[in-house]
Image (tube, rainbow, N blue to C red; front, side, top):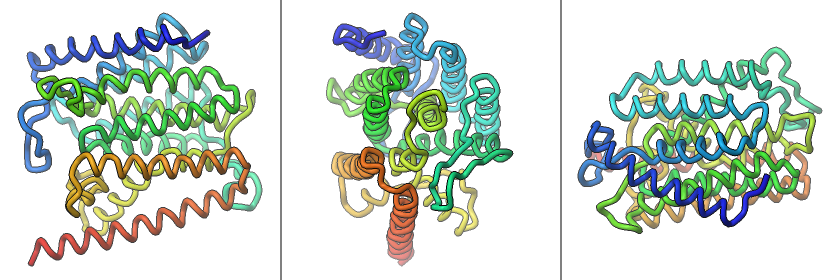
Length: 349
């Protein structure tokens, strides 16, 4: 099993070619994103970034079974999530249906692959925290949380792609350190598959060819990230990473989702009701343009992932890493709460 320059080039070509093909199909079947009160782009943009990435990944994995025993289950899972996301992109289905399907896929993942969050490590400083009977429900919540964290962060051009590359790059480094080559190759496969999408999404190769990721892509990416992190931190057969490190690698999507759901509940709104109070919206409300916002948020994600990598490399005590993350989130949430309140007060005056 090798991932050579030739392989990289082939994967890149398949991803780029599929974007062009699916883009034309999307316009015919109405799989496009139209401007509304929350979406301020111009024109109808094809929502096929996720479909293209899924096609590229499945095509490669079918011909080159990297995950061996779990290869087919993983392929089935991301195809189901991509189909679910595509249907949601086209017809805007209820969030309840999405969560039910995500929960079913999570349970099937546990049942047929054995991948689950069974041990939190010495995260709290009181010894190894084994979840025992709570392992299954906590895993389902973790999978649903990761899927929706990446789904909710997709709000401006390049952001989901940029954050995904930061996360997959960090996972690649960890997998290289621990010699988990299957997960290393999956991470590299996604990075290469995402690059053509970013180029089209940002209009680097022509504004008239612009595409969006869509829920199909964000859900598939979120699932893949949690699949890799659970496998990398819970597998007793290989050298693993510590569970606390995983929090740092998905810090921005995780903190943004948690913070905004807290604010929605405080305002007595549904935590799943979309609005314009995400981190990228707050940056833009403060005068930053789209590109500046993208760079700043990706830089923050890189910084936090870097802290996680350093903590793992130097084996900094797990409680320090966990409580440090929790303190960071409390600061993050407090700042965003204050900014959101200030912005709301100004708009009401």
